[in-house]
Image (cartoon, rainbow, N blue to C red):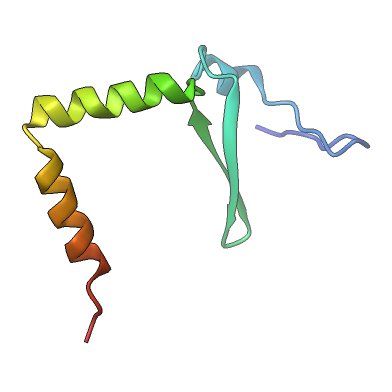
Length: 79
């Protein structure tokens, strides 16, 4: 499949590619080893994201003290 860059530096994704991501509106774009990599991104409101994280932590049984200890561990100076 080919995609052509326009004079405004835009690319149109081929239909076959778009069909694989029907609910995706945004893609994260990176370059690695001279390759363009598109990763689908789901945009959510900040308050919804925080609520979702809290729910997941609760389901996993992770407490506030667990998080505090993990932060302390991550901030330890490496020898």
